[in-house]
Length: 154
Image 1: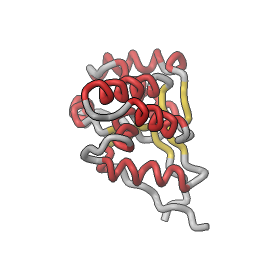
Image 2: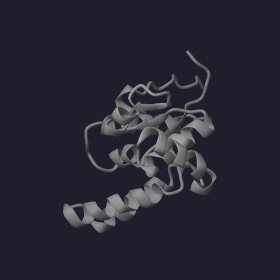
Image 3: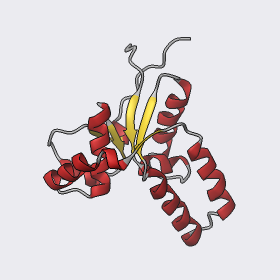
């Protein structure tokens, strides 16, 4: 059993699985439950993460039976997760280089740059992104493959 606390970068598609039942929602629940249970655990996000989530909430309200009140409640829960936010301005140079090197979107490159900056895996549900990175050195891992460490004994 490792005594190292869980540290990771999570993208919006992983966090949104907490609020919208999708493949991988159970795994996202486990990840965020682990983060909540271990005070030493840290999940990092670039600052535009919340803009991505608000955009998704808005689309769901407009295109499904997901109510605006539910979106507000879920946004409150999302904000309460205690994620560690890093300014994109601090990551921009690395993100540009990664986007060009790996032919990925600038948004995805910010998550990857943050992962490199904090020395932690980038947990995503974006299989297309992982295929684009295919075998190149990176710290990206699919949510379903991400190993959660054991929780510390109390």
